[in-house]
Length: 234
Ligand SMILES: C[S@@+](CC[C@H](N)C(=O)[O-])C[C@H]1O[C@@H](n2cnc3c(N)ncnc32)[C@H](O)[C@@H]1O
Image 1 (cartoon, rainbow, N blue to C red):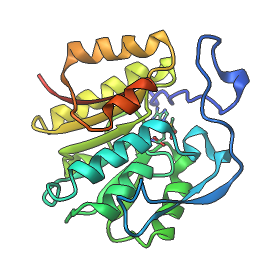
Image 2 (cartoon, rainbow, N blue to C red):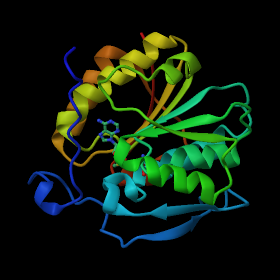
Image 3 (cartoon, protein in one colour):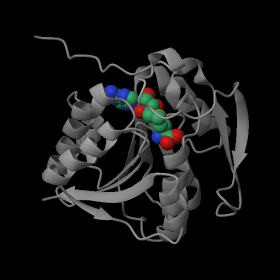
């Protein structure tokens, strides 16, 4: 059997970044932040951030936008949903949903192996062990059996468009998830940092039904180059 191709993921280093890439978030030292998403969470999320495991070890801007959107507009309509987060990093979005939205089934926060320990730590820090589970899901590889059995119908992806070689892998995983559950909705938030990011969107528009999502904060986040869409099966 041919072993699956491991996804290249960039190191968090200015030297690993192409010249046309706008600056990534400033490098922060490891620590634990308390985040209430502008008052949307009465009990703030504790998020340990540590870039030693990869660039997902700190909070990215699209994660904040997507988490706030879910808390503001989907607090009460996800109780029957089966939720999965892709490229979760430390788990910002998924854990915000687990804490602040009424959800009955435990949700999955997923990322590469390097991020697994940080996701687990953040689940524990927030006492969300019965509401969230960390899982390894490498884009472009077959979906893990547990995810196939779970059949997610709400998929969260924030700031997963930042590294061009991973674009086809991410598109393949989004396709697999929509095949698995054709009625699923993918909430997809990203920040445009370079021209190639819009190529990702153009490809997605050919493959999925892409719709811009209404959000009162849109005038603010779109000024910062952030976009929030839903993707659904054609
Ligand atoms: C920029 S971070 C965003 C983290 C988080 N969603 C947020 O908004 O704060 C992108 C995440 O995608 C993950 N990632 C990159 N390539 C991946 C791949 N091939 N398979 C799975 N996850 C991947 C990285 O490990 C990282 O945690």
